[in-house]
Length: 76
Image (cartoon, rainbow, N blue to C red):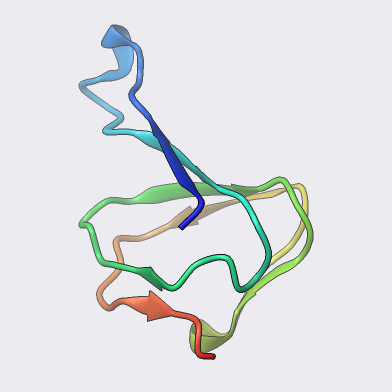
């Protein structure tokens, strides 16, 4: 999976667990597992659809996502 994780600077560690990026196409991931974290998602690429949830992330747009309650997977 093309995930890359980054740790925040010392000043932000009380507030941010990690930053991560996912690069690729709509089919670049297999499963997103619930991790109890709230995410800020910024789509810096093309339009991205998560068909299981009927969600479309538009380009150059930021989203606030609640903690996942179920795994999100892309069906083959």
